[in-house]
Length: 269
Image (cartoon, rainbow, N blue to C red; front, side):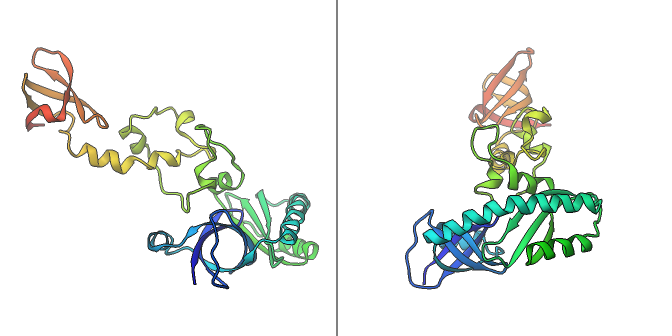
């Protein structure tokens, strides 16, 4: 039976799902699937080929039960509307109990098996009383899930500075670590306000081309090295990695750009 990559849940998780019948599904198909959390709505992204399954080897999957019907769609709309009430009730309960936590989102799983409460807190929170209050109100299992600021952006953010939907809320299945080294190597501005995403952390897109920059940089002599060119000796001052060039200072103190193919030898550094 065909297998598909499906995106589901408020955190837009990805998983490889089996079909209950030998049916063909198109990209973008809305489906009802069973996960370990219960019955959920999801979106088919593609058929699960070997590469997709390798990339998602640790992702949790499940089974696609059916394509979403008109009744399912109506039920989902009613559920999303009820989540607004559930959020307000949960927020009020947190205030009444004086808990040191910030409520971020409330997700009611489609099948009604549970309500997931997403929150941020710097300290450990005793939410046992809160769970009792919410379970009595919602008449279902309550799951408390502590998240970080990057997950908060994944839940709430819409568009990035590039004008496109934020990556964490679209195609990223996991959020890789990003460092200032990546910004420096790509000669991005180091102004925190311009290289920080909606979460306040360094933008995930700084990670995308970093490996390419590192690989290309290996073909260039290190900064400070003495090199021999067709026009004489020079000292490397900086790299223009994508152009495969180096900024050098010649013996007569002129500063010029030299193509890597014009470097005859590296004398030392």
